[in-house]
Image (cartoon, rainbow, N blue to C red; front, side, top):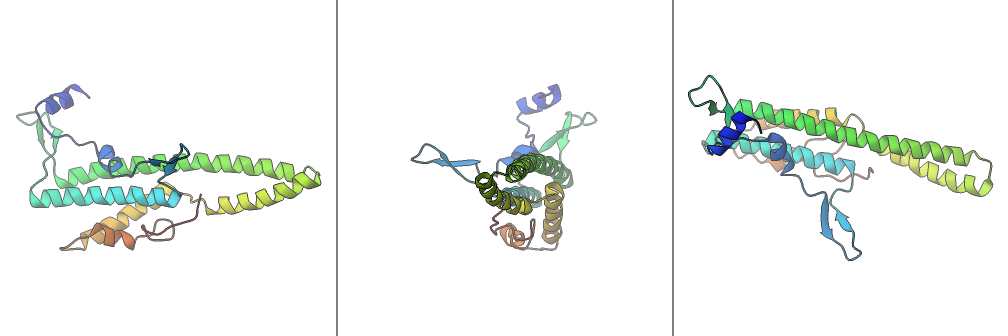
Length: 205
């Protein structure tokens, strides 16, 4: 925390970390501890992770809009030109920072998934080598594993960051068309990230 932020914090001024705002709405990576000593996986697929990230962004967006509209939300930003060294942020300024944080999280999500794809491709190459080694028993088992790996690779989404950004833009467009009774969940149901709605399930790995 820099000197200006520390001074504002010590004065009781609310400063918002928009990455934390989004991340705080994501479910835990791990669920309850099971009898076998392993933690249950909350996330089962790449699609579920993407859906959760978009949902967390949408809920944060809604929170900011409604907070400013109702006059119940006040966050501040350092401003050396103001008398006290800070000023209240506008809704547009907050939404701009929220978009930046979502973009960063989407990029990190894409990077993590790319590492998984590289690992899968490496395993794929290993299986190809085994299958072509000429040893019947190994070749037979490797061929089955190779076929399964091909199927898994074909299901791994690509361009994750752009898909998530496009989905958030779709959400914002639909949100702006609503005049009252806005329900984030209802809007998200009709938005496709990976070829299905946010609340749908996918079998990708």
